[in-house]
Image (cartoon, rainbow, N blue to C red; front, side, top):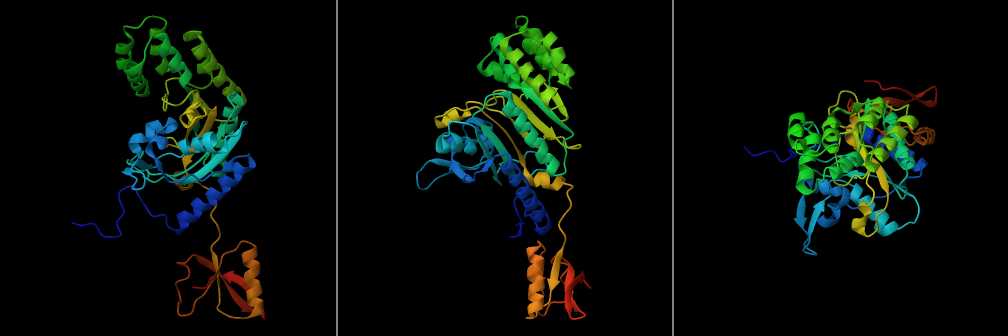
Length: 386
């Protein structure tokens, strides 16, 4: 049976007026907040050459992109599945600033497969990226901005999980792993598959064997970092990672931070701290972020970088902020006093809708909950009469 012409592909959807208004209010609110923190808005194109979109942070998203051949150049192009590689390209190649650069963005991305059964294949991605500062101060700033983002949306995070790819890389190097062996270890740790991990590390030398075996158990509050110091080898990569996470625990004590030393999402491009924010009982992360130094090398200029992104549609759906008042219905009259009343209401931010002739009893459907009527020779606003 053929689908009707109005049907959409699975996991794509129209955003109807009420939801669209909520999303747009939140978009303006967040971008204005980012601007107050010095983050400048950029708007990259939705389509680029594949080799650009699949570089750096986009490497893990290559299979998620829709690809096609550009009829102008003959090269393979793709719809972006993540905006971060594009913002990195702008920082490295177009702006080319010597100091710190703060950039933000908001726009749709498209995925071949949804992230979860309830997710859209066209997320509206919003995010902020900080380039040019390698110190922990940048990570603290970005995490605070993420927390502020969730606060403005009325969706305070239930927890922010923090990991650090430096621990995995230091222990992997200590064990002499590389290539496919390292990728296998990554998959095992991501799955928290303890029996498979036990088999994998059986032939490794100490102390790498014991350290890798204990990683899945090292999660919880800041106390787990103290425990990790006593259980993991005191080598540069491990020591630096634990120092940075302890710094976050000290300076972001007001945030619901938890630490997971076996959380390795995006380890192919992340170079340090990684974090994921969760809200309520959702099993999937609402926001993802972390440090990805040197990713700009693909565009000719490696730079320290850290940032976060999230799906504005998903955020708006979870938002508990109050909605706007309904519109005001105005009669079709040329009375100058009425026109002055309408102009004053619109200047105050009210939506005023003219009642076109021939339509009765349908204005609530259009969003009206009040109307302008004339009483005692003066125009005023009253509840909409059914």
